[in-house]
Length: 497
Image (cartoon, rainbow, N blue to C red; front, side, top):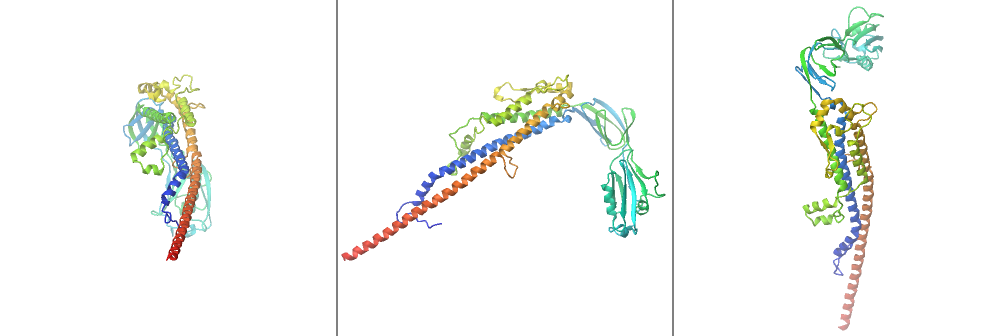
């Protein structure tokens, strides 16, 4: 930076003069900062709408689920014996349940400690065996043969290959008791662990999983067979299931232990009604925000404040000014208006293609209506009694309205897709605050404005430096003239003497 001389010779307040000159020039870059602020405010408004849409999408998703319309609650008199849930098709009432047997799988283990010479190493080092080892295991879904070399493979290798098979059999080794365990992943009477071949007696003699004769073709060694769960339901016996979790008459059971208890099924629409209330609240929040932004007046007398302007104002004054400055940025926005119109059209429209006898083809049939007050901008209002009556009358029909049937998309399906597409479009336009990089349309526009600001700041810096160079040159020239004038005066004074 060149040496700056401020009014030493001229007596001018050079710094103030240059500051005033730059203030006029800075209006050009200030307009870019204001444009940037308007873009950022507008982007924030779009993102706020997207946040509201996210909440609506979540509430809509709940109405896509059949479980949201179950409308039944189940109470078990003894949850240590069993717990249960019920679908909408389950008949209300009290039922007795006797759990006679729990479903089980198979667990087989070494009959005694293996006596391994070392906790790792090859099979030869661990058990003093040699040569090739071959055996075949069979489970519910088939059988598989395994071959290992005692000099190259370890017990860990054997365990890993059994676990990687598709037999549904898991092998583990417990070093604390020095035994191998084989366990099935499934339960039920079809589950088994059979040894169909053990040519070298590795499973019998080394791993001690059985005793007696080696298996031969057609005569496997069975290490265990699973058992089915068995219950008596309201006096009906002989009911068996491969798992302790099963469904019977629309009731999903989870058995815990043997014993007798009762379950009571009663109609309970409270949870379903709450989901509708959550949906309506989220919907109204979206339409209120969008309609407000679309109708908000733009006051062009209030531009974004510059830093210098803010320094001259109080915090309250700044807040009031900026509230007016950012109002109406989305007034009449065609992009938002399209989302708003489609949302209202789908939400209040009739769903075609439902069952011929379904009396509930739109939300208005359920007691959900649009406000007649135009100032409410399409908000929904709920007649809870009418909704509860519809859920009690035909919960399946209400569910079909929202979840659809076959190839027909229900109201919740249509709304969810619309909201999802709208959110994607908004993200493409305004980006997301959670993203590290903003590649949206407005993000790129802000990058261009920032580039123009950088260019203007460089120009202003160069211009200010040029002003200082010019004024410094003037001061230097004046200083030289002053020096020459003083010399001439001295010379004239000497002649007069």
